[in-house]
Image 1 (cartoon, rainbow, N blue to C red):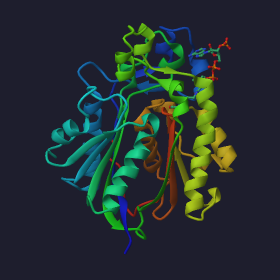
Image 2 (tube, rainbow, N blue to C red):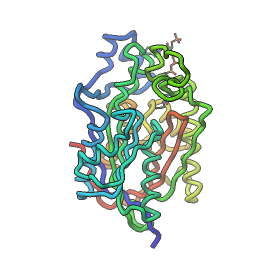
Image 3 (tube, rainbow, N blue to C red):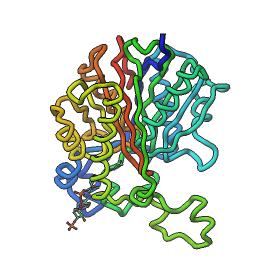
Image 4 (cartoon, helix red, strand yellow):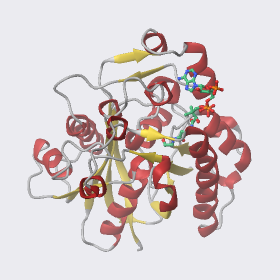
Amino acid sequence: MTRSAILSGLGTWVPPQVVTNDMLAAELETSDEWIRTRTGITRRHVASAGMSTGHLATEAARRALKSAGADRVDVVVVATSTPDRPCPATAPAVAAALGLVGAGAFDVAAVCTGFVYGLATAAGLIGTEVADSALVVGADTFSTILDPEDRTTRVIFGDGAGAVVLRAGDRRQNGALLGFDLGSDGTGVDLITVPAGGSEQRLSGAKPASADSYFQMDGPQVFVRAVRHMTGSVRKVLDAAALAPADISHLVPHQANVRILDTCARELGLPPERVVKNIDRVGNTVAASIPLALAAGAADGRMEAGQSVVLTGFGGGLTWGSTLLTWPEALDVVDE
Ligand code: UT7
């Protein structure tokens, strides 16, 4: 037997408050038409007062545990770049809210690639027998860091959370995570950033400009790199398994922009129906994006046991990463 992490549960939660394109167009110089045609987004969910990333993460995690029929896990990993507090990590509070005091708990910060990095970390802990089970949550509330007057970012991002339960099993079992590709290019640190609030700015002695406390993104530069690195990463993870893009039944990419997803599909030679998309309904939900898309793909009945599925992400850092898995035997997604 070759020990591997097996996908055993999947749950999601998005806050009930919906913001439509028309609602944004009432506030900003934008239009439903621009947002739909340039991004593919029609609406997004936004957290309400009294919530936090940890709250969203807990709701999704509770559903993932229910989906897996599990009441405990050894490790809780929360991928987020909007933690509840700058210090400490959000994961221990999420674990406590789930009744999992005592479990190992820590955050992973890789922005939109965070969920893939979290999966790789948890799979490594399971593979090396540090843990027999893990909960990996991707959760973000980007609504809390967007400049309310910046139409270039306000229209793109939404809040949400998605979680999976991994259990130790055999690599030949359906549901096994079979390989990972992870990468970064820190020369692109300024392309996706909140410049203020960290040690760099605090130690600079300079008072930050107000825009520096908000999220900033160079959209067109990021667009090009997102396509390059997601397609490159998918090819790498497939090469390592001696597979070709044609062997993938479903590609579940980070939902950055529908035009990015279509370009990736074209460059990989994948028919559009093999690429899972739910960006129209939730926008770009950062670390929650991949598990939310995975759940949407599973919910529409397209995944069959044993099929090859590739998850791929790209985001701030810059970071990127992919994983190859087989779809498990029976997985009841819990999203209510
Ligand atoms: O999740 C991490 C990874 N993130 C991504 O992968 C995001 C990648 N980037 C993108 O998705 C796109 O670059 C955006 C959606 C952010 C922007 O789309 P774009 O087609 O690259 O637009 P642009 O920034 O080149 O702007 C084109 C025009 C500009 O006007 P001018 O200079 O041509 O007159 C912008 O000012 O569109 C204007 N514009 C808008 N107009 C209406 C930018 N944002 C808006 C808006 N409404 N919300």
